[in-house]
Amino acid sequence: MTNPVLPAVEHLLYPLARLLLDRGIGFGTLSEVIKFVMIKEAERQLGDAQEGTVTDSRISIATGIHRKEVKRLRALDSHDTDYFAASLTAQVVAKWTGDPKLRTRQGPKPLPKKKKTTRGFDFEDLVRSISTDVRPKAVLDDMLLRGLASMDEDGLVNLHPDNLALKQGQEETLQYLSMNIHDHLSTAIGNLITPEKKALERCVHYHGLSHAAVAQLQKVSEKQAMQALLAVNKAAQALLKQEKSRGEQRMNFGVYFFNEQIDTDSAKRADHV
Image 1: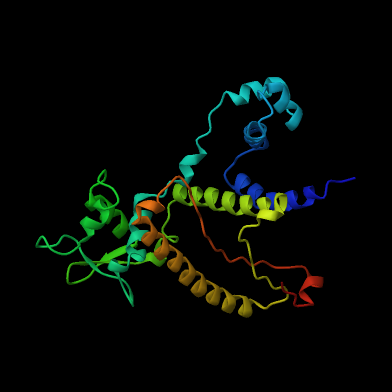
Image 2: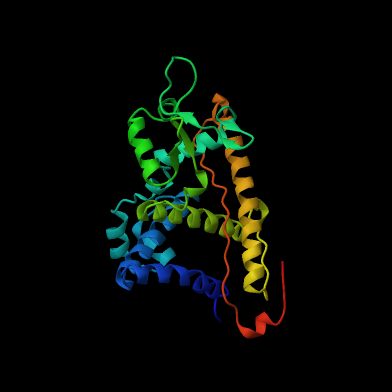
């Protein structure tokens, strides 16, 4: 009998296959990555279960991967935690949009590039409040080049946060893809494996809509999503100012919008959940 999990796994792998084919990554390379991940996950689960020493043989039995392959791949190191580190530019945008002192009702306050007196707060102060490792001018040049900020006639720096996702480079986009899909999938699978500890994972989906209707819903979704993201970001910035709120935890709250052509039979009805 076919494992009921396999059709779901097959479905979620199609977008990944599209990315791999687009980047010229063959099955041999993917196979190595899958074996490595299965070995590392089995190592973690067996270790968490406190069932004694986690040997190559035990991992081989759990994964079905030959013991010699287990030994070889266990010696490799993983660096995927680097994908969870937000860029300095992203941190600047997050603080600028989330700190009440840097906002008005209309949005992020325009900031002087460099204040003329010792009083007040300027763009250089903003960057240095996050990191002193990079010159504020380098950050500003990057933001101006990518359209994340602009200078007005009064010499003030204006932020354009909506352009952050649009102006990401290939490497940064891949980093967010890795983080966001990892986090979403981990939440969904966690809810399946441990239903008694269900985490937030909700969606609204409809079938049988016209292109015009989908376009209208996309605009509504983007507007509502940005309001939610800004509210969570504002709350996070406030918590970061409290020493008791600092620790070793990581969180991610994200949104997305998807649409595609469906088959003729499905298009005859309008379903929703």
